Image (cartoon, rainbow, N blue to C red; front, side, top):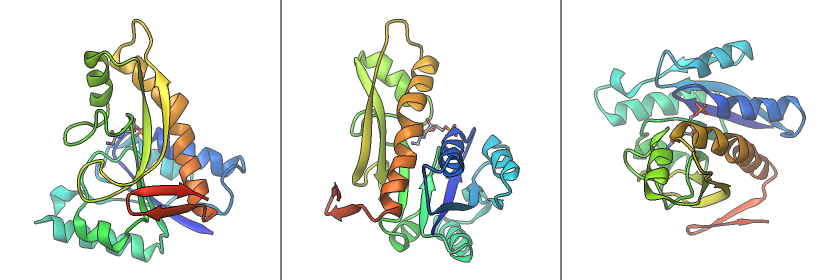
Length: 207
Ligand code: GAR
């Protein structure tokens, strides 16, 4: 059984996508054992409650420095014996200590085709605003392993989504979520739970 800890900041639709795939039997041998939010008002916490999943609010603001914040996260996920940490709409930065300890065991979903529209400040609606401003015809989503720099780790899965005439950042965000994020994030977890991923430097191979 793969024990998953999910980190969230907002609505939690990606968390919901994972829970739905577990419920409908498409994600076997996986269980979400805890949800951690950096924002006490995140609706994702309500989703955790509705599904009887223990949750916690652990916010960087509550700690003197990143090291202390990391320590609290490590303690929490170790107590819950997590095998995999999933950043599912987590809009804050985690520290190097935590990332190093969980090397290749933390994954993130990002709402663009990395390396486009990513890096510091590119989160939530921003990648969609920038994609529209740039005028790209295709965008999408990426699941990648987490490394200390923003959106920098080895790419696991990507899915392209067409930009349509008349799109607003909101309509594009919705389409990218529906057509890409809610599909490739659970799929990456499925591959990990079946031991199908091999990381070779920055290249991820699907076995
Ligand atoms: C999602 O679009 C996710 O890809 C993005 O925030 C949204 C959260 O939605 N994440 C990032 O931008 C991370 N850099 P959700 O809370 O409904 O899952």
